[in-house]
Length: 306
Image 1 (tube, rainbow, N blue to C red):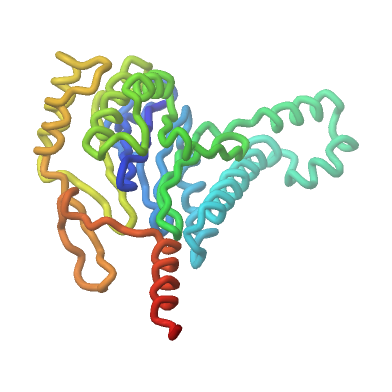
Image 2: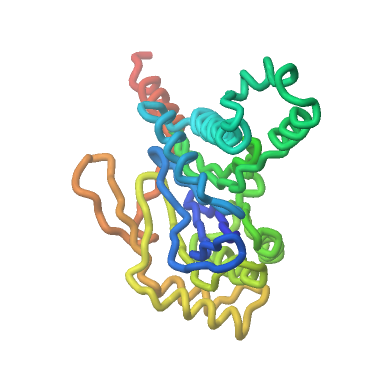
């Protein structure tokens, strides 16, 4: 298991955090595993679960389905749902039907006649209850530069969390969500640095759950750019402040430590030139395509002869 968290901020940033622990059947575990992967255009995915061995296959299938496609929300959502369902069906065939040399369609058509009634009933129940063992939290920006968060879980169910603008998955999800609620995380009210603190506090709270590791991976995303920190010490400083003074309130001292953490973004401007390395405050405000279109229409109207 694990904990993965995502939250939308003011100015349309998305902050994500997760632990880096990978457990093996509850017997042993290892740390240092990144659970966040770019998927398509401005979209990424986090994964949590009791068994994430299927996760690479789901992500690769989603990437295949999205190749050459737009970045619209429904396109990405449908691709992930189909990828999840496809991998689940394949796993059911491999684990339950391979012995009988049947596909799922063949099982539905002829298994009731060829197999003993008890065997048929047992396999039918196991197929219906089959759990792929992993959940995905997909986040990113559509072609209109609008931020989104949604999850995909067994048996391919998709749920949107654009409202409240944050969510968490994994063993520590309940603690994380409780913390974010107490801290009043809100996409329209919380600045980037404040949201980073809130997400980190939620992750630290989740560490009380089993199989959630103490190491934290933070990723900050905005349409057209990805963020990183020039300093690795600030996250440890934030955790120390949270442990000594926080729980659960937002700490100005911790937010200040984040601001001093030298957060930088590779920003690709519209001019097509080499990406620039900018701080949060240096990243220009953007306008969604529909806003730009409206301005163009207004300008043309002004230029028309009266």
